[in-house]
Length: 153
Image (cartoon, rainbow, N blue to C red; front, top):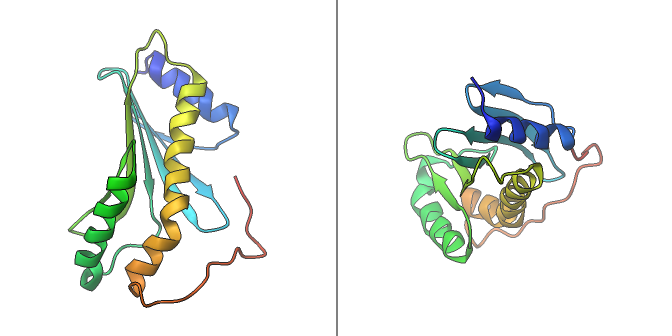
């Protein structure tokens, strides 16, 4: 069963021509970018009057680097006005989550899209720093270059 918040979220995704799967109250899709393919979950919860965006980093943090990554995540979260990065200590999955309490009477597709863009852009802004810390630490000196085959969606 869906409600108004779910329906508006669906309209927002269709307006961006995003192809998705649904799982209960969640839309799941991939955003292909010149940096990576990010798995995204958009939860539209009519019972709690909330939308939440979760953007997963495609690489998992190696066990040996998780302590170092927690320090970076703290720094990134301190700089972040809305949303937060988190790491799953069990499997090393790293994600950025942004939640927004909404009213079913006032929510519109533009608000949903804004939340989605905020979360994706924050991950993009931090991606190089995250990858550097995840795989080598501050001493690593490499550059991310878009692939010739990359395309945005």
